[in-house]
Image (cartoon, rainbow, N blue to C red; front, side):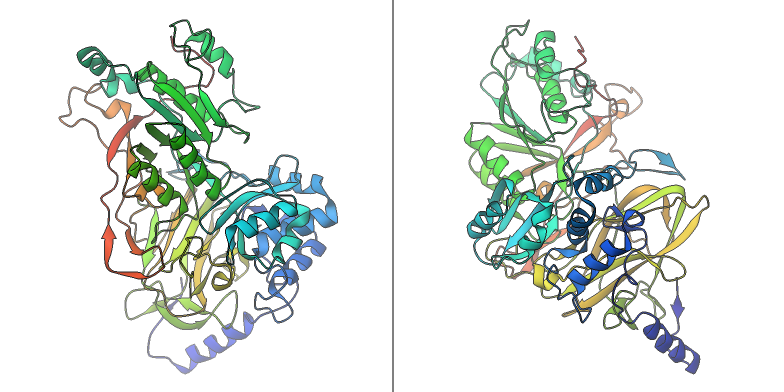
Length: 578
């Protein structure tokens, strides 16, 4: 928090000038984030790794023109950690990436889930989304030549697992425009066993003599039968009657059509299919992982449709799906709906936890780069370039994604952003704790990846959030969505819509959440079918750009969410409910 009167005094001018001198560009690791680089703990990195990664991105002039500028600091850190310390050291970073999620601390419960690490368990590969400079087929071929596994493409986007030791070569590809680590999360809690009652599905089966026969219901989630931590297995669920397949005691022997289960996860996809089978036991079932990157998610949607799925459901979101334009996953949803499928997607668990405002230039030099201009959070005649955040001991604040009103080059036909924006979490003494500062004009992504801060000091802390424009015209709107636990946004918290990406598709049914115990079936004192959970994501974002990246004359408003489903009680995978 830093208020300034518009009538500049001699003292304020001196302070501004000195502030600019204090934050002028420096080389090496002096500006390197002290806490985390994206989700990587900075304190675990050697001075050599920090300096090498920073210089590789920033270049000699400190303006993000280095050899690895196209892939950003987080991926550059992984490459240099692997080069200096080896795959075991990268694996150790992976183990420390995940910040605890759904725990209560300081009055806030984090229901939005921490992002899944993009690093493989052996520390040798990282899941990425890459924008092609021209043809995504050429980029996919080049990345496969460097050892990419599970590669997929959708429109101008390529996703897959790139060898960490090959990231430097990937950054130099002439076919690559930009690359980011691919962060996904499940957007719904574990499936619940009370749905049959709260939705009166049992009455529908009896009254209309239906059980799903003739339909094929397919799920996209992390994994189906590929988990080292889930109890039980798919074969056990079949024997218990929780899933169809050979040996099902109810005679439902059509096996689950598993198209792709190559990603190790929590087997939430199997839990989803258990519940579906419980409600519509006559329906065929199918599965495809959604954790292979954004391009693979889009491909999976189309593959399920091609396998005759009549209903498709997912509980997955990618942090950097576009806010203001239909992206590659959204386009895949609309395509399969146009082909006759019904598509349902979890709205998410972010409530209204977001900040959105017009970009207001403050005239003050940036924290990350002196040539940048800070955003003014204060909408009044005063100026405040820092948004204060209080973090309890043990608490975590996470900026899940930060975006602005520019189109994405990942969408075919779209030239991409013409503004470069940065965001940072900064300590009271000005130390940069974590930052997102890719050259967005160059990479084609109008978004910065996940940044977070976890307070392990033993005391409550006050930190600040800073947004700055590095280049290009002022964007009409800037917006970030936040999550975490044990923190508070102390000022200028506008709140607002948090449904974005493919649940916003015209053809999608975005599913909100209501606790099962707040439905009419479980409470006789309410006259509504259900009460929406406060943490269920709210709609209201407007689509501003078409597929060519041109701004609509009239923005598209889509009323979301569309329907409400119950949650509130977990269903352990592999445990029979019968």
